[in-house]
Image 1: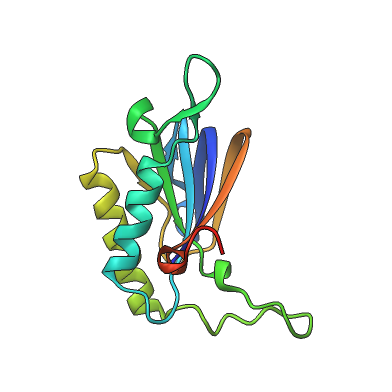
Image 2 (image 1 turned 45 degrees about the horizontal axis):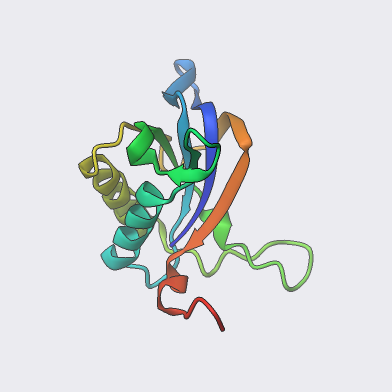
Length: 159
């Protein structure tokens, strides 16, 4: 699983519903926007790794302005949006290939599992709608943008 994390002062996601017009499906104040991609072969252990890493990542400033606080420490909120395009393979041609992304059923299962895990950590979590065309609005704070990949959990830090 891959997650692109953005520290924000506020964020929202909306979808266009043919019957109801534009619907705001989720919004947050200060916290993190997490764009979450699921790959073929990912499992609950990958989701748990990302949830633990993201909730405890020290990317919020303390009194001295240093990155010493996590989303849990500051009471940050999360906007979690499914994003299969994080698995785009752009090595050949001009059109990205998404064959490494998990199929919709498994991707949705792991996405929903991650949502539940984040909530179990005590964070307020807003979401987009799986497989919907969404518009995400955010105010990136810093800017701070970090990529986390569960495939990295077994790799040594200094290689």
